[in-house]
Image (cartoon, rainbow, N blue to C red; front, side, top):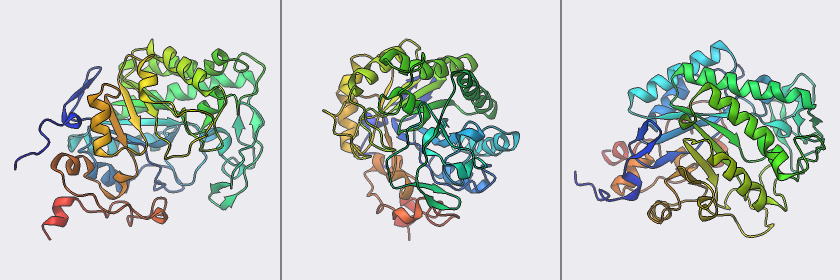
Length: 370
């Protein structure tokens, strides 16, 4: 078969540290809530990820680093031996299909609910509740609660949870880890002045609000070399009631600090399709390229054509695609061969249980041969 995209920017290999990616199409992390009450990854999840292994890189769904980090029903964790064994089956299957996969490390912070914590309040940098329509719990949707502000002496334990999760991910055979510091979850809550009103060394200035993320990166890169570690940021996002007036200063400073590590990549949610705070102009990959010299990943709302342009211009090295991957398990192959995309999956299927709306989307070749 003649490949119409032999010269495509998306299908040039990319080197990230010691890893070579076969293309620059990344499967973005997508919470799909299929791990069940045990939060142990299962065979159905292995099938799901294997189906999507034509991506140059898969970033796993957000995976909780501890019980304290839980904030969504039926999402997987990486803090027990059983969870570790479950993930090993998935990683081995992805590798058998020629794929690469990073684990996204997650602590939900104030976006959680006491239903997940035996009646104890969720934790956050400050006792400020999310202004929103509520949180999904195992007992239905409930109003957000005012979280408990973390004590200063509790933070080293959370940092260590990230380190332990990284050690488990490395032992499983993942190709790397991504630190989730976006979308209004704990590390993002510390970064942003809207949610961080602390008066200790973790709040009050751009430098202090970055401190916890910096300590987490230090811990994670002590467990695994920096070229196997990525960080995700969302400078434009309003999800989980985020958006701070000093967002440009905060996120450029953060990216500049992260540049010194030699990370695998910086994953920037530079689009506005996931909610935009409207506090000023949207930050772009060009803004981050000025202060971050390593591999830069764009995300949110990209089409194939927009991704090609971002890479060709030098603004991005690779691009992550999220929702299109739900109903197009072979998205990279569809892009490569100019095959049409399947219709976007109905939102009611995103977090439903079972295989329907999860592993039952066919590859294009299978559809075309019918």
